[in-house]
Image (cartoon, rainbow, N blue to C red; front, side):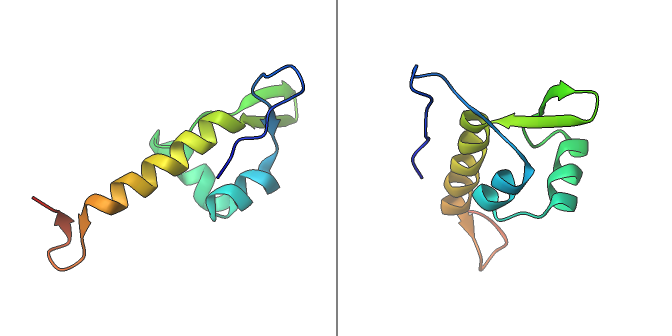
Length: 80
């Protein structure tokens, strides 16, 4: 998954529907992961609006992909 950048080469902020699309998780799962401290914190844009760093979400997704490569479904643990 390639990160889109602004014309100035900076990270961009993405709203919840795009976070859901990038992660495959629904709102309730994203907020549960936030509560557990295992998902990137959003950036507050206003008193009622948040967005996420696209780069942070992309890193989280990549981390999940890399962790799944270590998972052994037969033992339920990591490969040795």
